[in-house]
Amino acid sequence: MLGFLSFIAASAAATTMVDMESNRVAYNNCLVEFTTEHLDLKTGTRAFKSAAKEACASERNAYIASIKKDELEFGSSESEATTYATEEADNVLYSYTDGYASYASSNTRPVKEPL
Image (cartoon, rainbow, N blue to C red; front, side):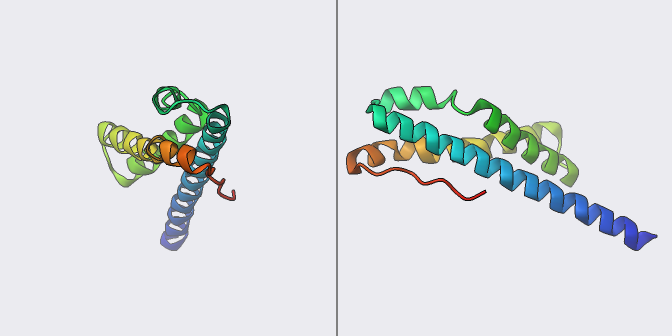
């Protein structure tokens, strides 16, 4: 019986990790599309950074929720889980806001990750 319960717990943790990774990829790929669209429109860096804060809200929220779920299962407090999850989502966003000027000046585009 104990082995079965351990298996269920391990399966739940693996499912959470898969959900978290698939939500990260979905958020990342949405930001790829958003960034490419703005590069094609030749949006200025400042305007892009401002607009990017609101981009891909549903994907961002799903990513944050999956991280929070994992952190809460790990034993973090609600506050700790929320802070950590938000920081992780901000890091994904930052990679695009920080790299936008470089993409624009080199006339390159970000690439989607496979799902």
